[in-house]
Every structure is written in C-alpha cells, then in structure tokens.
Image 1 (tube, rainbow, N blue to C red):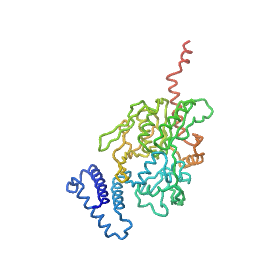
Image 2: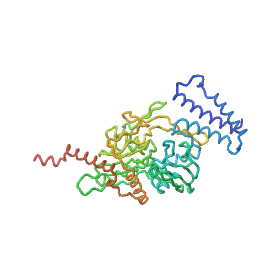
Image 3: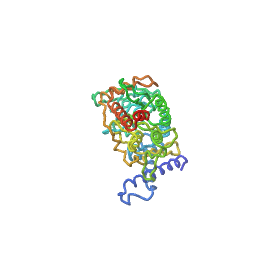
Image 4: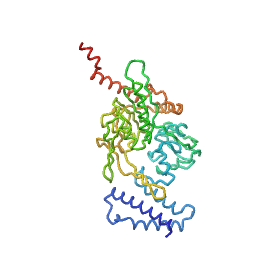
Length: 434
C-alpha cells in the first residue's frame, strides 16, 4: 500500500470512528448485529467501493483518492445535522479568516427554509448588501446552476470564492414573487462588528440620555471595540443603553461571553454546554475593565442567532437586561472544529447551549420581554438607511420609524424614572428635611 493510500485510509478510519460513535449515541435502538463494536468491518466496504469507482467509473478525472475521500466525509457530516460539515483545507482557512473579521465572499448569511436556500441577512458593507439583497430572498440559482438539491454546507461553498470573481444569483423575492438576476463581485469583506455608537437624539423634552450601539456579529475584536464605544458614550453622559443585536448571526462563543461580561460581575455563568462530554460552563472575567451598571435593553429579531442568543438569553435570565423585539432564530448548538492531518477539518455539532437558568436555545430561541415588530416596509427602509451610510461613519439612528427601538427607549426611560423615585438625589433629600 502506498504512503498516499495509507494516509487516506487513516483519515477515513478516524472519520468513521467519530461518525459511528455519534450515530450509536443518537440511536440506541439500533439492533446489536447492525451496530458492531468497531468500525473496521465497514472500512472494508468503503475501501472496496472506492477501489471499484477508481477502476470502472467513466470519468477518470473525478476519482482521485482525495476526491473520493472528501466526498465520503462530506456525506457523513451532512447526514448528521444541517450545521455539521466537512471542510477541505481551503474552506478551513476561510472559516478561520471569518473569525478574524476579514474574509472573501458575497456576505450573505443563508439557511435552508422549506427546502429553499434562503437569505437570513445580507452582511453590511458586503457585495450582497450593496446589491440590495434582503432577508427572506430565495437563491434559486448560482451562475445558472440550481440550488434545489444542495445541502447547506454545499451552498455556502458555492457562494464562496476568490475576491474579484463575478457571480450571478437568481433571486426570488417572496413578497413580490419577482424573480431577478443579480450580478455581484466577490470581495474581501472587512466586518466592523461594533457600529453606530451614539447618544440617541430626543424630541426636545427633558429626559435621561439613552445610548445606542449595534453589534453586527461576534468576532475576536468585538468585546474590546464595544468597551471603547461604551467608554465614549459614558463620557457623553449616557444613563441607559440600547444594545441592538438584530440581524446578528453570531460568531465566536468566547466573544459573546466577553460581551456579556461587560454588564455582569466577574465569575458569573453566562452559558453552559452539554453534549456527550461533561458539561462545561462559560463565566465572565474582568478582562475588559469595569462592570457597566446602567439599565440595558437588547433589541433582537428573527435573524438574531447563536452568539446573539447567548448574550440575550444570559442577560434576560440574570435580570440584567430587558429583551425587546421578537423571538430569536433558535440556533443553540455548539460546533467543534477538529483539524485533520492534511489541513482539512471536521466542524461537528458536539453540544447544545443552555442559558444560566437552563433554558434551551436550540430550535426554541429567546423570547422577548416586550414584543415589538417591524413591518416588512419598515424593515426594508431600515436596511436601506444602513446601505446609504458613508462607510466607517455612524449613521443617525432614529426611533421615528423603528417601533422596537422606540419601545426599548421607553422601557429604559421608565426604568430610570422608577429608580430615581426610589433613590432620590441626596441634595434633594437634604433640602426637604431642612
């Protein structure tokens, strides 16, 4: 057996071991005779199938051992759940770049909805966002090839590519039933995760100063960027904060925990994960300085997922924030990345998130304390206003046509008035007694 074949066999054995262990845990009702104690008998079946394909398949350009191995691994992982996937070396590198706030692609977050590849959110400052793609748009074809039979990982691979490459998406917009082609150019997308930090303008009447910050996703720099933004707003007299997590698809769990830690005492449990391995708790630290103690309202919507749900779920459970908006996406599973010897990797679901009070996030989402919705027209107008912003400059955020933001501001003002009445300023109290 050649060195190449031995390496491939080792990869297959490792992947099969993981796959069979996962299947055994999920389905203990499998009869014993079909659930052997080791996967090695089945490796012979796979090796024989690969040998026959190499020997007899009509197109000899698609049957290298590497191609066959990667195809087998893609199939294994895609059968587990929609979020598990096999990543070839290029895809693994792309995933690592994603977490560092810079990567190449079209900048659309997608999911499978009723069997259709659907845009959850076009990321800001990306080709998809600038082209006018909207949440809910269905991608029917990519460069003329139907997306109907693609798995979610395959669809993501299809949308990725080298910066500068042109790609045509055939889009159906459910609200109008219109089908239209959009030509986009893939680009290196630099994601600024903390945006629009400002004191919200008031209607001229006296009242507390309410700050506003938006987080677009959770990556390595996010907590530090947010801490600096809060420092700036505090110097401007901020008394309460609206933290906008709408359309935020998540990102790094560690970043979401650090963001939560800005509003909680050190050592507070933010989230726990449970799977086949022992449960693990994630707690806050004092890494980013002082704890911010002013009242907080968090805006969420249907596209707030993963890390957004960790933050919202924790601060809601711990009575540290009021959640305003609509029920979140419900993506509460943990994907662990396991590198393989050739530079590829498995991204596999290994656990589920639980909030501090042990509420499940996955397939349930985080329910708001205050329900407030945008109409579709208001939602599109909000996205258009963000598209019209000058790159790198904060937009003028207004609650005038944003009911959830208006409700969040009202909640914070009411909270601050209540606190002030419960604890009047000392100077006032002295004046009354004199």
